[in-house]
Amino acid sequence: MSPKAAPTPPESERVEWKQSLGEWKEIVETCAAFATAKGGTIYLGVAPDGSPSGVQIGKGTLEDLANKIKLNTDPPQYPAIEMTETETSKLLAIRIEESPIKPVWAFGRPVKRVGRTNQFLKRDEAHRLMAMTTGRTWDALSCEGFTEKDIDRKAVRDYLRRTGMKLSTPLNDLLKNLGMPQTSSGFCNAAVLLFGKRPQSFLIETEVKCGRFEGTDSVNFLDERTLEGNVLSQLEETLAFVRRNIRQGIRITGRPEREIVPEYPDEAVRGPSRMRFATVIMQEWVQFRSGFSTTVWKSGTPAFCRQI
Image 1 (cartoon, rainbow, N blue to C red):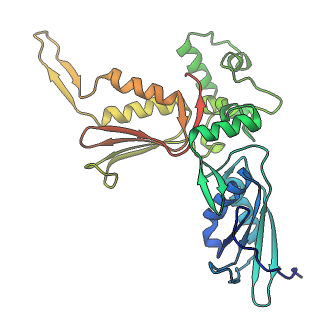
Image 2 (cartoon, rainbow, N blue to C red):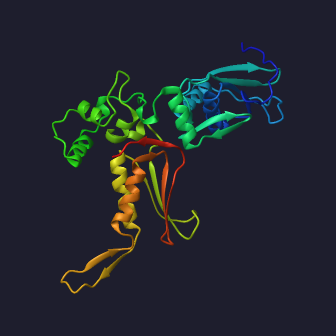
């Protein structure tokens, strides 16, 4: 039999109310925010006025909620979920401990509890917290579950050819040269991004979205692609998307062959793209408007800060 519920405490820096399981994304976000701050408890089945509204609990409900929280937070959070009862309804108490590694991300964005609100962190603050709690940046952290069998050997060979290194160079030597050696904890996030067969299986938000829009707002898509794979392939596919969406002219020079003149010089396209990909951004958007202006923006903080 479930324990009787005590009066629900008011919302605060360590308490939040949620009315239903339909708010699971907000629950995940709050779990990450609590973990980045001082920990806290989410009371599920509480109306906005603080009265118990109850929550429907079915077979597998608690397991499904715990799994959603684990899969959509980084580092993964493992809540303690307890069911309690009032005279008329059932409530869930979702308890999250303070994380020793900060910040904690939800859906690819670092978030922290401030007062009674969840605040997404800016890049500098996220880096400061990461360095303060781990002594390392995100790219140096080990990637849970990634093993040597997940390494794309073709990507490794391509990198060795591209950099002029011997194709016989052992993987461990290559990683050491790049400042990302394999440790007892496994491969770091940077190695996964560079040489993983499918990095998005382990780092689910490391995708690049490219879009071309009609007019000056981001409503009507003329072209769109979501790019996965390692960062070098994402770079090349982003450049291909740009070229596909810009016009080309022909210049008559008097020579037998015609000179193709792109709307934007190749150097202007590759330069900013290479600089951008020196820092891989979680869910980065590369946007092209029909007015021939380009914009690059990001949701999230830089994940990979090494020259490639």
